[in-house]
Length: 337
Ligand code: KG4
Ligand code: ZN
Image (tube, rainbow, N blue to C red; front, side, top):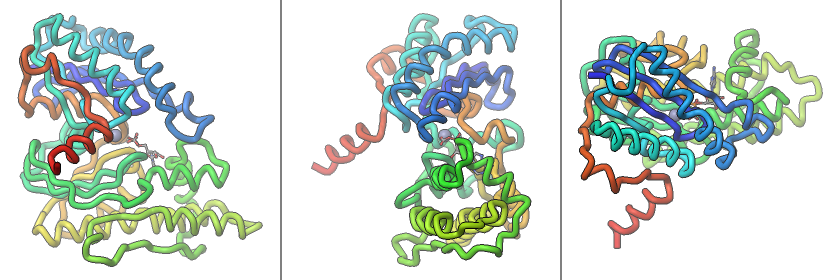
């Protein structure tokens, strides 16, 4: 079964064709990094406009890459949630329209769950259940993955996401956006024991699997402002150790508490060299991480996961809409009333 996947939840327009949840036949991404770089963060209005500009050329490019036409596709999958409202709407509307016009089944996908599927595009799936650590510019969360439809978030950041913290500290260091890869590169040549920065654990029981990065960011800012002769490589290594070690520690805790033998790590920060090397040192926990280009937002993970999800027919998807944070919060509120 060949699924066309579309992803437009944030600042990457992506399209892919994946066979049987496994074989990536085509995979195209248009990154908007350059468009948002002057603002040091994603500007929603610019993101939506860029998605509109790129989505059809990318669908055409995927068909060319896989040497097939849209009529060879068996179903259409798209990210429905979470994400920026305007951005989600572009991909979702295009996917719904294609499914309607081509008379194909439609598969809405949760972007976070798709990230957790990404490693299995190039390795055998792990046996359920397992732990999931999602680390990106927008998310830092720990989940218990019982199966592809049953995923429970047990912890998340209570303030900044880890990638966001990297980007903000990189901005203070006057590095280019996004700062994660830059800090990672510098850190590889630095001594992590040079500068003293806080290791923020959140010791209350309710925060057992939660994270906090605003304290590390503030301490980093104070140090940058105070140290006239800051050694940027040593600073990057010292910052990186504190930012990443807590991810490893809490992932281990979750595995231990729930007797889980394996851990999936995904999202942009999963490209980090120090995180990847620390994961290989974990004893008794098998890890699965996507290859670099599938860590960040992509549509192959959407089309891959969709193979295992329910397919909707016209009458079920025609009135379906995207779900952003505001809509999810309103739905929860309605349930409580
Ligand atoms: O998953 P992603 O592409 O987008 C979001 O959905 O947020 O992740 C982007 C984030 C950025 O914050 C970027 O700085 C970070 O991932 N990142 C890294 C590395 N590569 C990307 N952070 C640390 N080390 C890296 N090597
Ligand atoms: Zn993402």
